Amino acid sequence: MTYASGLYAADQISNAQYHAQSDVLSASGAKSILEDSLGNFRYKQNNPEHKGVFDAGTAAHELILEGEFRTVKVLDFADYKKKDAQVARDEARLEGFTPMLERDLVDIRGMAKAIRNNVDAMALLEAGQPEVSAFFTDPVTGIECRTRFDWFPEIDASKRLIIPDYKTGSTANPRKFARDAAKFRYHQQAAWYEDTLPILGIHHNVKMVFIVQEKTAPYASSVVQLSPKDIELGRALNELARRKFKHSLETGEWPFYPGVTQVELPVYAHYEGDDLLDAA
Image (cartoon, rainbow, N blue to C red; front, side, top):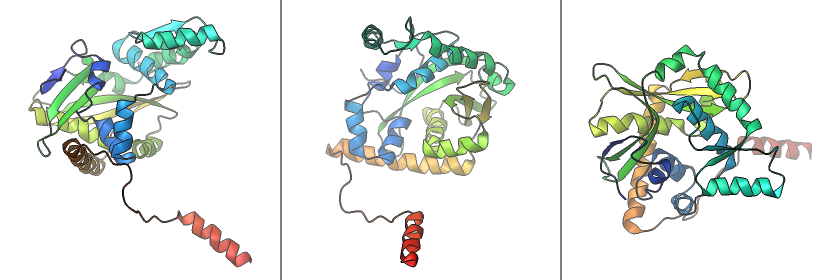
C-alpha cells in the first residue's frame, strides 16, 4: 500500500507498515546511504534484521511517550540462557511484540519516573500525540519521502513548532551528545524533520530538539538542539542522499563501492611509522 502526501496518526499506519515502504526514502535511509553504500542500504531494506539492543529503547519510547507498554511482552524468566526462554522470546517477536525480562524493565520504569523531573522535557511533551507519520514528495528530486515523528505537538500557526525526538544513551551531557550527533548523523535527521512540514505546507517555522536520557540511574536527561550550521550540513547531505537514491531507483543499480578509491592512513599511523624508523 502506498500513502498520499500528508500526516498519519499512529492508528492509521503501524510502525511495520511505515517501514515497509521500500521505495520511499526516510531520514534513517538517507543516513545509511551515506554511511555505507547504496548496495548496503538496499540489502538491509530487503533483509531486515532484528537487533535486540534496540528493545530497551522501544520500551522506553512507549512508556515515556505513550504512558504504557503497547508492544512490550514481559517474560517470566531470569535470563535467556535456557531453551524455553529463547523460544518464548522468539515467539513474542514473531507475534509482533517486543520481549523484555522483568529485570530489564527496572531501568525503563526508572527512566519514565525521572524524566518527569525535567520541566523542559515535559513541556515539550505536554500536548500532542506519539508516532505520527508523514509522507511527502521532495520538491528537488521528485522522489517520495517519509518521516515518523516520535512526538508531534499541537500546532499553533502563530508560533514556532518545536518537535522533540527522544534518544537514550550512556550520557545526557550536551557536550558529549554532540559527538553522538556526529556519529549517528543526527544533523541529517534534524534537517529532514524540520523540512518535512514546510514541504507539506503545514507549518513553515519548525525546529527539532532532542530529549536525551541516560539508561542507568540516576537517569539524567537534557534537551539539546543542533546549531544552524549543523542543520545546513545535514540538509546538504540529505539532498545528496536523495539524488543517489533517485538515480538507483531509475537505473535499478544499487552499487557498493565502485571504482578505485585512494585513501590516507590515519595521522597516528605516520607518527608510529616515524618513531619506528627513527629508532632503527
